[in-house]
Length: 366
Image (tube, rainbow, N blue to C red; front, side, top):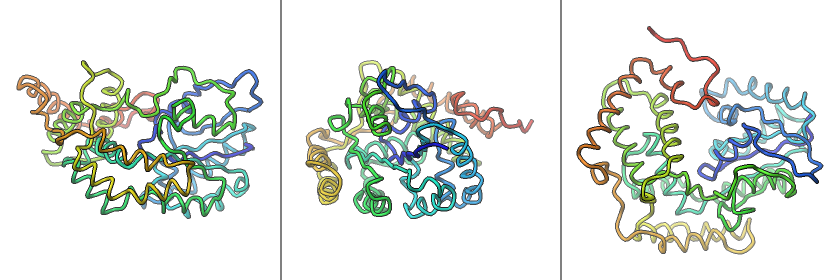
């Protein structure tokens, strides 16, 4: 039986993929003076299906089976830590998580810790815009994204995180996703320091990418992805569950390849940045008072207009590419659509990285 379970709750757009990559690849090393034991991480990449089984109607019927598999793995392991990681917990009511632990993992209830990271409001607005654009889920402006998130109250953080703390007490930790607040300026390093409770470990190849700037999409990338998605959406028979993996894994390749000349980083424009400051100032202050030393969230929010551009950025492909380049993008989009429609299940499997695919491809309809 593992000695302790640590649940990494996300949030989305706070370096979760980087953390999960290290966990899935077992790409960490204990320090020479470390007395820590091993980690068991049961997911091929993340535990999103487990988290969805708590809240998504189509996944709820699989909750018992998924938690039973997890519990059996933890029960049979002598590792010091059993780690669960899924950014989808951001969208799950903490009461559902508590109920699931009591039902499926009762022996671990008193040996449990949870950690979440929170991104400053302005940065989260821009990153959510880029995320949904690359997946083909969103096709409008940053202003419309701001209005949608405001209507849903998605970026009013304090009530949600206070609920986690009310239920789990000091077993819940919230960390600001800010380079100067993270251990060694890196979210992966910060997570493992929290996991082990010490600095006696090593993550090879990690060199401080807390903000994700080195692998984030540029304006030009988002504009290209939007054009591709527009062509994929037009014919009948579009299925988001097929198109979204393309957006995710293509953007992963784009992020790993430096943009010539650096490209253009997505930013708020000053008018929108001032609106964001006005809307979220109280929430940032409340979050600081409830969880952090100093005022990191308020300071980051107040600085948003300083880093904003003067006029809105264009995410239209024709703004950034020549006619000949637009022609090439259109042709590739049409070819991708042809493959997607011919064999959608196999297409969604094939665009994934080898480590995140199912072991065997789905049967072809041909």
